[in-house]
Structures are given as C-alpha cells and as structure tokens.
Length: 93
Image (cartoon, rainbow, N blue to C red; front, side):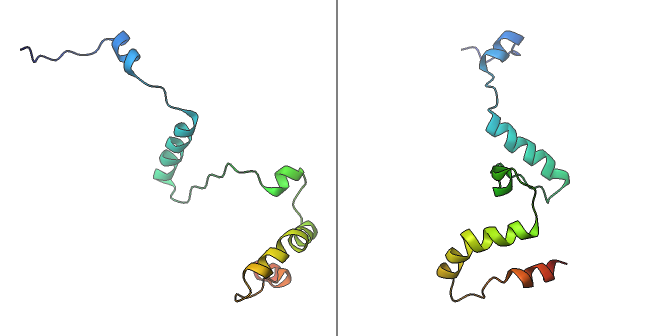
C-alpha cells in the first residue's frame, strides 16, 4: 500500500478544476466588496424607470403611485398609516 502524495501537474489541475459560473462570480464579487464596505447593495432587477426608459421626476412618481400602487396599498394594508406622497416628499427634503 503506497500512501505517498505528489503535487498535481498543470494538466491534472486543469482537468479537475471547475470554472465558476456567472452567478457565483457575482456572489464572490459581492463578498469581496463587502469585506471593506458593509453597505454593499447589488440589485439585478430592472426598475420601472429603466423599463420605461424615462428620467425620474416627482410628477411621474406621483402619477405611477396613484395609478398603479395606491389601490393595492390601500386595499392590502388598511390598518397601517396611509402613504401620503406629499408628507413623504416633505420628509425627504
């Protein structure tokens, strides 16, 4: 029984090494960036503005909220404080 070990040569190492997928590479990049900056944010989902290809502005925010989100928010969360866009704008500024 031989229990000696030898170092892998270049061909052997490359034959067993599995390349990292793009998803795993993204995760590794987030981990390495997060080592120095704990507030790293990575979002791959498209925003509504990127889908519409428009520049963000307050009037469009108000329109999209009232047209598409207000009904769902009011119907889903009646026990919570209603979202008032004007108060929210004053709070930010």
